[in-house]
Structure formats: structure tokens, C-alpha cells
Amino acid sequence: MRAFFSDDQLLHQPRQFMRAGRLCEPTDVPARAAVLQRALDARGIELVAPPDYGRAPLETVHSPAYLDFLTSAFERWMAQATPTLEPGIEVLPNLSPYHSGKIDKTRRGPCPSGSVIAEAGYYLGDLSCPLGPHSWQSILRSAHSAVAAARHVCAPHDGNGMAYALCRPSGHHAHADRAGGFCYVNNSAIAAQTLLERFDKVAVLDVDAHHGDGTQQIFYQRSDVMTISLHADPSSYYPFYTGYATERGHGAGYGYNLNFPLPHGTGDAGFLSALDSALDALRDYRPQALVLALGFDTYKHDPISVLQVGLEAYRGVGERIHALGVPTVVVQEGGYEVDAIGIALEAFLAGFVPAMA
Image 1 (cartoon, rainbow, N blue to C red):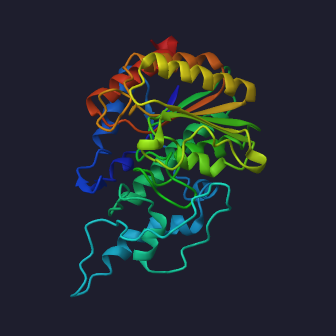
Image 2: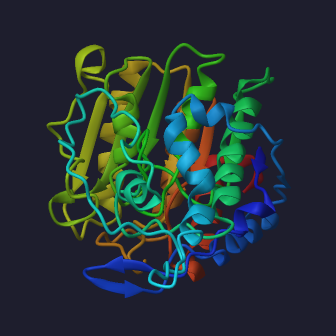
């Protein structure tokens, strides 16, 4: 199995995010990537730096105006400084423009104002996505890791292709033109779109603790990518507004979006049972390739988890994905208990790549 990561992904070092009205220390810290690297090293899996693909793969999923904002926001933010205005240390929104939020609608146009303050409100969906001086480079290279993994799987193989993208920042909350939940560009969606260069039907299976609302929004009206998400019940958990079982897709995409919201407190048995149901639906779809959006914030001791999943369950996830026999790109999403995520990845790999166990 090949794995991809760029050291530039460590450059994003957020200094704050808001939770329940309080500015908090970030949980998406560079140390997360270092721990996951060690878990790969322990299994003899070499990390390879992805090529520089530029913005082109990102533009297959995200609007150019949104990417322009991410590219230039920090410098423009700091350039606002005057004797009467001192910008904050990072780009964060203080506006929340109303949008219907209906995922059956077409994409929004570009922000009607060229003010960076207006654009921050328009393109940053919440206060968990600060942009610092090096954030864009990390965001871009994280996406490149996903593209490299997908292109590896697209290449001819003797068996089923497998690859792992150690993505940081994560991506599954990023909409086509909006950041959210520590996510800026949607690495899993970019991987799926890249797989379509070879395969006609692709599925994205998201097992992070949070609903993959961005992935759902991007593919909601399409039938060539099926999106399935297992996650904690969003009625009192991020992202709150989406992730319900009634959301099935729209137009040509109706029936190709499935959500499995789990009661808070769900443990290994309930989690794996829901995964089995999701995999039954996935088999019915008959995808030619799969993106697994792999989050470890389902772990019972994760600082922002409401589930009670143990570390051994991740081996069960790996075993089930391996048994599908489908070319698979694993894209790293959440997981913020730094002392546990390496063990979780090792458990997953023991099931996913049994020959290396």
C-alpha cells in the first residue's frame, strides 16, 4: 500500500477556534500528523510526498472564487491595518450572511463584495476555520496527497489498488465554496473526482464522528458518486443542520445519498452494525472504486466525541473494507486524541492490509 503526505501540511498552525461562545486551544494540531506517521512507519509503510498538482484538481470540486479567497485572505486581512483598525491574528468571520442552506439548490455565486471581511463571512462557515500565514500551503498540499493517492489507485495493479492519504487539514466539512469544521477543501471529494478519471462509479463512505456535510453537498445531485455517512446524531452535534436519514439526494442524485445517524453513546457493536448496513447499500450500488473518509473522533476518549467506540473497532472497519475487494483510497479525516490516533490507525491497518499484520 502506498501512502502520501507533504511536510508542508504541518505549516497550518491554528491558534484559536470558538466552541460554545468560548475561544479554545486548537485541537487540529500538527502533532496529529506526526503520530499517524509513526503508525505507518511501524508497519513499514513509506510516506511519499505528492507531486505539486497546482489548483486544477481542486477546481473540479471547488469554485475558483472560493479558492482565490483561501489563497489571498491572510495577506489581505493583515493589509487592513490602520491607526483605527487592528486585524486579528488570523482570518475569522464576524459576519454570517443568510443562505437558505438547502442542498437541492445550485451553487452560490461569488461573494458580491470584494471586502476581505465580507468574504470571510461568506466563505468561512463557522469559527473553527482560522486562516494563518501558511494555511493555504498546507490546505493545497493536503489536497495533493489525496490526488496522489487516487491517481495511484487509478493506475493498473495486479490486485486491487490501495492507497492512504494522510490529509491534514481534514476536508469532509468543506462545501464547494465554504469552509467549516476545521476543513477548507474537501480532500475526499477531490479524491472521488480524481477516481472518476478512470472509473465510472465511485462511492464515498465516511466513518468520521461528524456528518460529512460538505461531501454530501458536493455530490447531492449526482448519481456517479454515492455518498454514505455514519456519524453521531446531528440534532445536538456538529454540523447540526444536515446528516439526517431523510436526506437522500436530489434530482439525478436521489437515492445516492445515505446517512446513518447514531445515538450518542453508541459503542462498538452499534457502530459496526450500522457500518454493515451501510456496506449492504454500497454493494447494491456496485462502485468500481471507493473513498473511505476515515475519522478517529468516534473514539470514546476523543475530546470532542459523543460516541463510545473502542480502538479494536477500527480493526473491524479495516477488515470490512478489505473484504469489499474494491480499489480504495483512504483519506484521513478527524481524530483529536493525539495519544490514541496512532493506535487507532494501526488497528485499522491490521484489518485493511492483513498481509502486513
